[in-house]
Amino acid sequence: MDIDRIKAGIKGTIGREIYLYDIVDSTNTIALQLSENSSDGTVVIADSQRKGRGRLGRRWFSPPGLNLYLSIILKGGINNKKLNLLTFIASIACAHAIRRFSGLNVSIKWPNDLIISKKKLGGILTELKFNKDSFIAVVGIGINVNINISEFPEEIRPISTSLRNETGKTYSREDLIAEILNEFDEWYSTLKKDDKDRIFNEWKRLNITLGKKVKILSEGKTLVGIAEDIDENGFLLLKLQSCVIKKIISGDVKLINNQSFLP
Ligand code: BTN
Image (tube, rainbow, N blue to C red):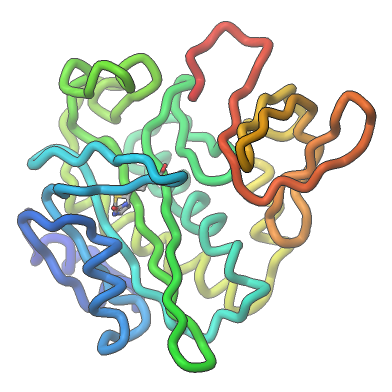
């Protein structure tokens, strides 16, 4: 990967400082380690990861030369209330950047999946480090860019996709990274200004979860209901058959009543 090409495309403060590695265990791990001595918006990128991690303790498949694995260090005084929204702004930024970059119709599945054609294109893993009274957040982004569907491990092949798989084209990872970081910069400013309405409105416009019947695996239980809305923290409000509304803080959502393999 060509760091100069990425830097040439950076317009704001996110990505002004970049650490680029050939191989790491996880860019999130490196970002958390570097975070105390790094400035807000520093980015860690790797060509591949040995132990790329996803949500809910899952592994993130991270082969070399093909995809995008990056982590953004954020220490811009985001308070507890705004924390959950970091994942939201990251998914909005990725969806916008990828739409502009590839013309593909990217949607968001609560809380953090980037979806094209009912399959998973990418995901976001936000992790925190408490530092005296404040905290540092690391937003990790993984996007399947130039990987061929046949190269995915068998168990995730039916539910995964990549930009190349969707269009047959090969993409510059450097240019896509710059697009994503610039878009993230804009939404990070929106979050700092506390303009939650703009964030929720845009997330709702891009999401494919709300209004659907869903099955959720959360805290060891399976729940079925209608994904009614999200609350002011971004938690999912699930309407159960009994009409009780249950707040879901984290979990694995499957859309039901459609014929797809949607993860
Ligand atoms: C998910 O959908 O479960 C989240 C996947 C997040 C993957 C990215 S790749 C870059 C960063 N480093 C990691 O180890 N994970 C995130």
